[in-house]
Length: 185
Image 1 (spheres, rainbow, N blue to C red):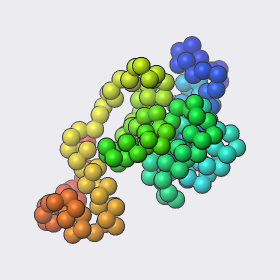
Image 2: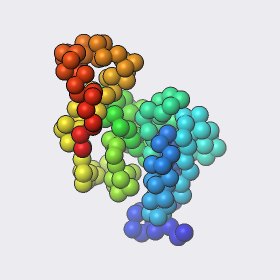
Image 3: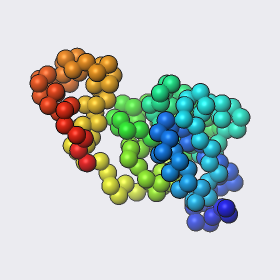
Image 4: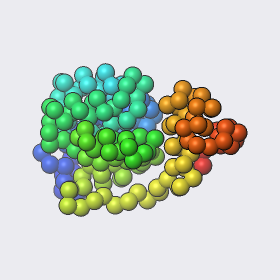
């Protein structure tokens, strides 16, 4: 496949590392990014991602924040040490201000919430410091953001409803009703 450097301005090194434990998502995003001219390598774990970075630090990276074997921020930190000029996007299903700040402090260029499509990822990867990427076409609704936040706290409290309700300052039965419903769009 030929690299379309004119259209996407990938620079001299179009190497891209994808680290996410959602295998179907990684396959789809890999194909989409290859069509845009990136040379893609992918990993499903922190361990596999760090091994790939040790072998060859990429020019670009898209790293999931929460992986089964640890935090994607470990991979972000290693890439930043090995390749200070790399453009790194942290991608997660649990969007929160605190994690966004932590990701950027550790060296991420930008932070995107799932679901993000390939165009959102490319726009964030290629945006310069002077220009911000365009907002996503289909951002999460306020109800979805609230639901994601509740789910994140619930997971951090080891799925303990009483502890989660206490930390969210809400009634336990209200929380149980929210958790019983399907996620909003």
